Image 1 (tube, rainbow, N blue to C red):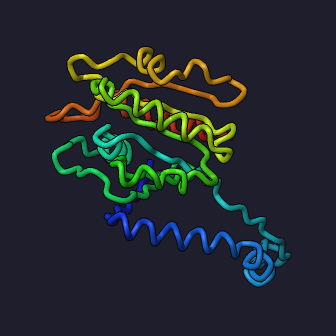
Image 2 (image 1 turned 180 degrees about the horizontal axis):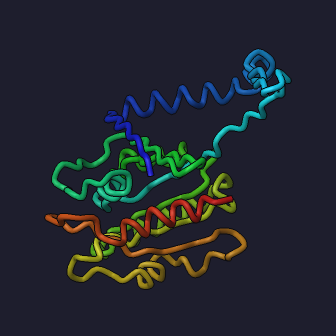
Length: 235
């Protein structure tokens, strides 16, 4: 699976300015749609066969899916994504996200555009600004940090209370399974009260993951994450 990665390191002020610009652009969307729909329409291409007969080629864009990756600070979001999108299994050079990362995975004709937003408190208030057009929500939990589970519960419920998240499938990663005292995936699901979510509202999956420091190859759970991203984004 081919991938590309863009890392944006932003201050809270810079992120706020970007979101303000997005909101301004959204207010102008009706005008933009009316102006650009005719001028930007792509002309059909043609090919000539052996008998010099010209036929129109049907152009179809590759399907794209938008994945939003969230989680509290130090949950391990950046490390998991780094290993999902590359063969690199080393953790020492992965820094926490300040702002957001954009990663693209390409599998055949499908492109997965993955947005990861920082989990520190100053950035969590901006999470809701990234919900629009999300096809899959990935929420990463540090399963060994039981003290912050209640905060994770609050954030998950806040996200799912947004109308833009209706019907959006959810993949919860119970990370750091290699740590002593880490909750198993089923216990993380109970702690987050995921079983109370009606199947008609959201399709929910929970996976246990780990990215052990010093490992010489990716843990099998990372391959499971990669496969689940494709499966849950398949429409």
